Amino acid sequence: MMKTIDTDFLVVGSGIAGLMSAIHLGAQGRVLLLTKKARAESNTNYAQGGIACVMASDDSFEQHVQDTLVAGAGLCDEAVVRAIVSGGPDRIDELRRMGVDFAPDLGREGGHSQRRVLHAGDITGREVETALLRQVLHNPAITVLENCMVIDLITTGWLGLGGEQRCVGVYALNRETGEIFGVRAPHTVLATGSGGKVYLYTSNPDIATGDGVAIAWRAGLPIANMEFIQFHPTCLYHPQAKSFLISEAVRGEGAQLVDAAGRPFMEGYDSRGSLAPRDIVARAIDREMKRTGSRCVYLDVRHKSRSFLRKRFPNIYAVCRQFGFDLAKDLVPVVPAAHYFCGGVQAGLDGATAMPGLFAVGEVACTGLHGANRLASNSLLEALVCAWNLARTLADHPAGAGGRRVTIPPWQSGTAVPSDEAIVVAHNWNEVRTCMWDYVGIVRSDKRLERALRRIRMLRAEIRQYYLDYLVTADVLELRNLAAVAELIVRSARRRHESRGLHYTLDFPEADERLGKRDTVIRDKPGEHIGRQRLLMGRE
Image (cartoon, rainbow, N blue to C red):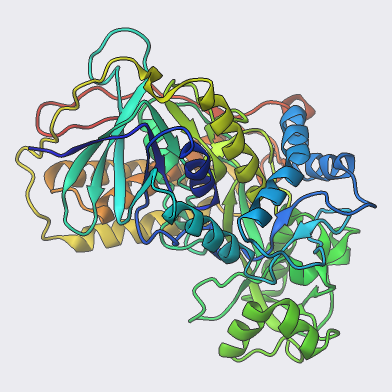
């Protein structure tokens, strides 16, 4: 018999969006929080820069709004931008009450006209994650299950029930035991973060395989603006560094991007120099590397004293020293790497999606805040405000409002057997990521995108067959999701016949103002139940 867990609210993901959602919802009912690895492992935990929020007397909401709109290259939803920017100060006060100790000085990052980035040195994400986890673990209404990964959503339509299509729970896999179990909940919140691992080089941790976007798409949810992938300009270039990110805040303190001879080059690309928005900086670095044949460029912050650097950026300074670079006296080699998804599951300011019972908060969601390019440090702000709005919306819809309790059928493995060909998973994993890096990176073309789509679809067919033939494992689920996200990115990029923000194509190098307010939305019908061998929710 398959175990089924009943809860009032299911939250998937333990980054800032998931933890804040769980904390707020814990006042309304029972919360089950699923996280696919250790509870502190999330993109939030690796966030260095901070949280953008208007706090200084010489700053204003209007300036923050305009900076966000400019960075978003005409695709932001201005009403959403204003709501999130103006909601920031209250959420920062809430974090402080929870024990987050922000530094007294405000940082500045690319695209910001003022210093408005609250930080805790260069480990802001870790400090926030620690404080929120402390709140969660001391709340008796919240249960945390680690090392558990959602397989797919369970919807009334898939179950063959009449009436309005809604989400009623999930199937999940315990990564440690291999047990598959069901969760039944009237409200499910996806807070699964990003999918940076779809690219060969990324600043994201290994867990960032696009799970939430993939499972929502398979259930028929609309997915928006997946062509806009932000590449962080400055990840440490070293064979053993595994894409260690060097925060934009370093450039905020005056660091310059230079070539191997120490010559600054950003002024030749943008009047804002090294503090231009990330899409401009990443493309400039890409062009500079191709122009010179170099494998990297360099970050020069040697004008700052060692004592300042060790105090302001203790973690970055220590890690760079570990790999042989002293920020105070050395040029530090850097390259761009996939960093943030501006697109995702279409969702409102309260996380509401097109399917009742399903919400999406944080990076997994596309709310309209970021447009074609995220302004630095706006992501944690969005997660805080939208998690708060989510709880306010659900307070008006009690946990029992999901209608009758449905029966979740036991998971059927049919004739599937344990895999003895793990090399197939590893090979396809590498092939998806290499294909995306080579053909769907910072600079694109129609020819590259066509090649990518053919190859990704072929790989997805192979992965789907593997998924059918062998018992479910976490590696197979992550590969299945990664390949789905890859296809969504490629299909979205092929639909946008212009260059805007993070999407730059050689075939359409200019922006087309007719497309300035038009989102790229992909919504496919959910797949049919395929035979009796396996419960498959979603389009494959």
